Length: 171
Image (cartoon, rainbow, N blue to C red; front, side, top):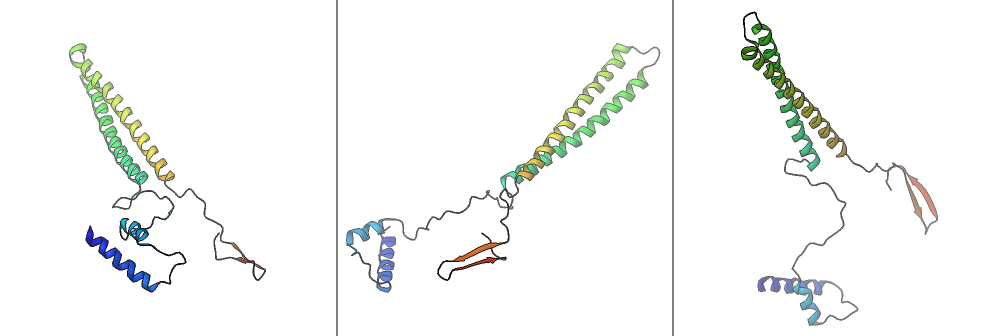
């Protein structure tokens, strides 16, 4: 810590030698108060708030949207798989429903499986549509909400009394 303080005093003395003397005299107590603050701390300026960007260059909305597209795609694939399984169960019911085959023992369980697969198909298809819709909405919301300023600016020079239009500038 003393090394940083010595460095700060050195730089303060160097800058004091290069800059014109202030109109208010500087006392040693005020310089120690200045030097007690962290040396070379960056000045805080007000910058417009932007969305955080991760290492891949995606904003949080884009990251969630693409994740939802992935989940929606997986749900769509699952919906297709269960739809095929429901179709196969229906074909098995038609094949097994013959004279002399016990309906309750052979046909009904396969028929129940087909209904269950159809429910899974619709649930997963609905989930895929929902994830795709929310993902698309997030991508649309991620755009710049402020409209671009017009490409015309008005320049006023009060000293010369000049008012002009600048077609290349912005407000």
